[in-house]
Amino acid sequence: MALRDELNLCAPRLCRYARALVTGHPGPSEIADDLVHAVLLRAWEAGTTLRLDGHDLDLHLYTLLTEWHRERLAAGRMGGKAHMENENFHAGGPHAAGNLPFPASPRDKFAAALLALALQEREALLLIVLERFSYAQAARILKISRTVLVMRLARARAALSEIPAPKTPACPAKARPSYLRVVK
Amino acid sequence: MRGHGPPVSEAELHGLVDGDMDSGRREAVQAYLAASPRDAARVETWRRQNATIRAAFAPVETGPVPWSLPLAPGAEGAAATRQAAGGQAEASGSHMWRGRWFARIGLSFASGALLAASAAYLAGRANAPEAAPPSSEGPSPAGLNDTYVTRALSALWAFVPPPAVVRHSPKSDGPGQDMAAPILPTLSVEGLSLAGVRAMPGGQGQMLCLIYARPDATNIALCVEKAGDPGDSVPRVSGSFPSSMIAWRQKGANYALTGALPEPELRALADAARAEVAAFDGW
Image 1 (cartoon, one colour):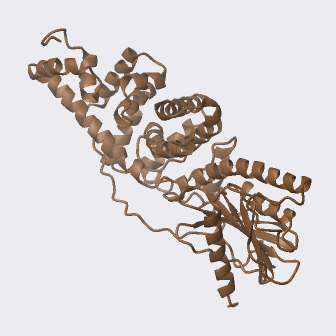
Image 2: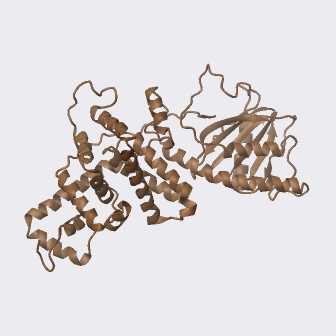
Image 3: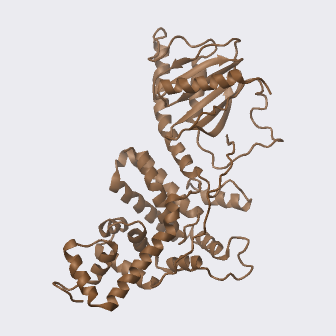
């Protein structure tokens, strides 16, 4: 399979992981989607030299995404923005933020519960549960031992306890008009 | 934790939930859980957690993924600026995200191939003018010179999906204001979707290229410019796959169709475009 096709297959899953990691909810996130886009581009650019495919490519993409997410958090460039996105999500959007107190919906509680986890625990939980990596693969992505991985997983599960199930709003596919784009 | 055989570890309980344990130990762990309601309840809680998390994010994998700008230095700032300006360019929820990303990849790939092949093609013509290109059916039509070929190809090389949607405004003085004469066919062929328009200097004024995306992520460009010479010409194929191009002159305009397509497909598209131009009767 061509690298392009493999990346094509990985993109939605990477997006899912990134959104869960960054915002804790499945809705669109500029930061998460930017991360995915950057990782895919990097993988594409480096594809011919790295010569990765299959599981190796998969692990490489998740490793990149996880590391870049950490780096951006550490650099403090994303913290404010992520918080803003999250705050907007909880408050129902930028215009609603700061106006009236919103009752926390199950969706809010779900995201809050995920984001309340320590980052390392969240990474471990999402790689295993959401992305269904084996313990060995997840440990490789996180560059830790299997024992440490299970410890983080156990802490995440203990902290989550009974995570409230979010009610995913029905989003009927809406046909969008196509606009002519002028390339400058 | 003790069951049948070696003690059951906490890690094995997690392994049972996540399907990551030796098959030989599965029965022992399950037997242990049968005798330990407290741990069985924990395991059930973890299973519910797993199901909840997976269900919550299931729509992401199958649903539309919004387009995002490339993560480049200053991308955050640019995005913030667009948001502050109430920009609607993000088109959240648009189905274009994957299409754009792979159009970009496809074009990156095609660029290299087209550049190399067309350079070889042009170099070959310069060094051996009497030698016909591999799949050429004859000399180029009058007015369709190598410069035009190169410009048409470069429309595809240089095309990068724009970060923002720019809509035509009736009041704007955009490119193409003086392009009333050449007819630009819409090429309404099934499977093709218009990805963008590129305007660039041409030999007789401005050349416009419509970039179309195909379902297989390959892209084609249909370019048109005013012709310097009158009269129509039959379509001629230049170059060879993946940098083949088919060009013709029709109704006072030069047309070129290029992309990484086999010649029969390229010809079929050219025929469709020619038919649309021929059928166009003004207003």
